[in-house]
Length: 114
Image (tube, rainbow, N blue to C red; front, side, top):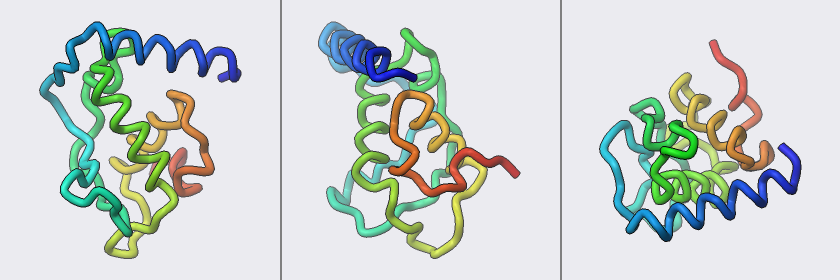
């Protein structure tokens, strides 16, 4: 994705976020460790990304922005149990990079599937 496309996508997300009234939709949610504002390690994700993250222009902007922020701020940290990313973790990380997140912000195994 080019820088120009990323910028347009980010602008569209922010506009949609403002227009949406910030309402979150149900579905498989990212565990962004909200109880720990500055986590020292990552937890394994238990649920695959739901449509609220993957539905393109119909995705929930608040959820998408939270996911992008989580991996941008914490994605290079090790998992708390010391194990590599699971298949579900890799789905989230692949979504993050497909939305313009830098590969350097997630473990190298993020784009591989078992």
